[in-house]
Image 1 (cartoon, rainbow over the protein chains, first blue to last red):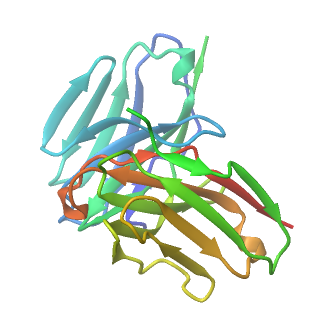
Image 2: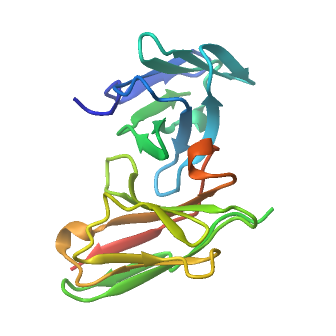
Length: 109
Length: 116
C-alpha cells in the first residue's frame, strides 16, 4: 500500500465546473496535509494546507480533511483553463513530507 | 521576499560522471530539503537539514549521493558516480520552524538532470 494515494487521472472538466481531487493516506498519525499545484516543467507551488478535520476555504479552493477516514480532498470551484496542472497531495509523517504521484487536471474552455 | 534559489537549471552528463547542485533557501528558513522527482511521480525526499544538522537522510543513496549544509544556510547535493536512473529533477525546498513543526515547504525551480 502506498503511503499517499491520489485518484488516478487524468481528470478533465469543462470551464466553470467543480473539479474534485482526492487523496488517501496510510499513517493515522499524520498531522498536516498540503496541496501543491505543479505546472508542466515547473516546481510545485503550495496552494492549500489543512491541519484540522473539516473544510478550509481559500477563494475558489476548498480543502477537506477527514482523519477518521484518512482522506483529504481539494475542490476547485469555477474551474479555469489556467487551473490545468498536476495537483500533488502531500502528507506529513513525523518530520517527513510524503507526496502522492499527482492527479493531472485539464480544464477545457 | 526572495524565493528558494537553485543552480544550475539544467545539467547533462554521462553516466559515471559526477555532478553537484546548489541551493540557497528563503532567508531565515532553518529547515532545508532536497527532493528527487522522476518524471510522472511526486517528489521523493532525499535529505532534510535543520540548520547544519541532518534530520533525515534515510532515503538518500549514500553510496553515490552526498549533501552538506556547512554554515546552516546554503546547501550542495552531489552525485558521484551518476547512473542512468538518476535522471530526474532535483528540487530544493525550505521551511520556517523546525522539521516537526510541519510548516509549509516552498520549492525552488529545480535542476533538471539528464544522464546519457
